[in-house]
Structure formats: C-alpha cells, structure tokens
Length: 276
Figure 1: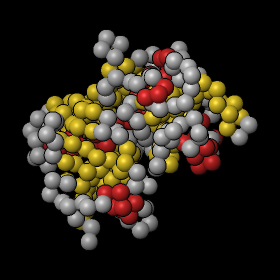
Figure 2: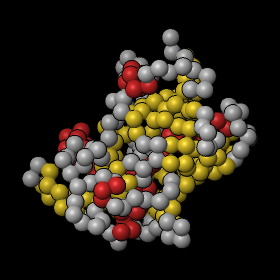
Figure 3: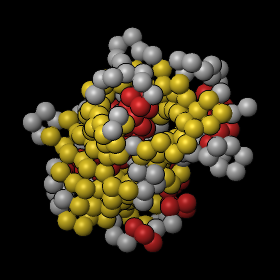
Figure 4: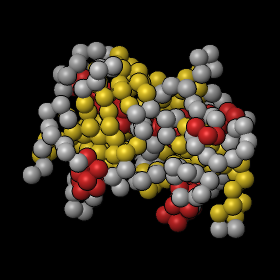
C-alpha cells in the first residue's frame, strides 16, 4: 500500500488514496501505522476518497483508531495532495467531511500548493450540539474543577468538540497529566479536545492542545478556530488572530458578516512510502 506522509503546522498524518488502495479496517490501520516506533509514525490516518457531493471526501482516524469528524490541518494537506498529484486542476475545492463540506482555496507556486485557506464553516455554540453538559445557553467561562483546581472553560464545536482554557505559563503545563482529565471528564459525553491558551494581545495568542484520541499534538486547526471564537466571546481576542502552535503558526479569522471561520496555513509533503 502506497502512502504519503504530510504535515500542516507539525500536525502530521499518513495520507492514503483510497480511490486506488483498498483499506478494509482503517481504524486498525491507523493504530498500526501511527505508532512512532513500530509504524510510520503520525497523529493519525487520512483516507482520500471520491465523493458524490463534493470534489473529494476525507475520512480521518486518530492515533487510537477513533474516527474524528474534522481536522483543519489535514484538510489543507488533502488540498495539496490532490492538486500536486494531478487528481484535480481546480484551485477552489469542495471537500466532504463528517462535519460537512469545506471549501479549500489553494495558493499554487511553481505547480505546487504552498498555502491553503479553508472555510471551516460556522462555529457551533449550542451546548447540546457541541456536546457539553450544562444548563447554560452558551458554554462560555463555565467553571470546571480538575484535581481540586478551578478552571473556566469555553466550549465550541468546529465539527468536533473543543474546550478552551485561557491561562498563563502554558509552556509549564504537564499536558500528559492534565489533558486526559479534561478529555474524559463526565461533562463531555463524546470526550473533548482541550486548548490551553496564552493571550499575547488581541491579535496574537499561543496555544497547546490535547487532542481527543491522539494526546498532545504540535497543532490543531479546528482547535485554533475554536480558540478565536471563544476568545471573541470572552472579550480576550479580536476576530483576526495569529495563532502560534508548537508546530507553527496559523492565521484565523472569524468573519462576523457570514459567521464563518477561516483558517490559513501551509501544507507540506514530508515523504512518500510503501507499506508491505
């Protein structure tokens, strides 16, 4: 089976053209190939498929084999993959995901995609749809106690659930201990991704992320989008933000005119390979 290793802001996945390759058990394959000692090594597996309602379809499986609804960094890499490999000549693509159809705008230089702007759609703020268990109309600055420490979380879905924590000194956080306690807290019926955010100014923030089913990763595109939405609702960020992640930076904009969130960033092919 042929594969391509790609990364967006350090969020690395194994990409397989499922229109050519047969993948009978993607969940098992994701667990096997994502292992950084006995496999290729990645945050997960992405299958690129044909679609009846878009140009292409993407399925994404986390490191632990669970299927995610959406991944912003992976969607950018899919755009690069299909264009660079000649599967399309379009510079504006429709990509089907489990959280709906996303629009990709490709920037091409010397015949290859360098930057992709993704219309991530509208943020979901209704607690029942995120989902998060609360009686509040919006899950903004909700109190949550973890290990006798009081936190405030702001919850947003960008097709997948996110809990945003604005705090300081994020470099000192031990996410391997803290992240799972947020992910598996009973308030989140489907578990959650958790972003720990340090605001530099209204247009600049840095974050670390604990991804549901993957652990700490170098970047999370949907998470960066959720952070900006939460930051605006909390009065901490403007609608256009440069988000610094461990693996690089993303430009995020929440357009108040159409309520859509846009994410712009690079996409890089790391290497090609074949699994026996």
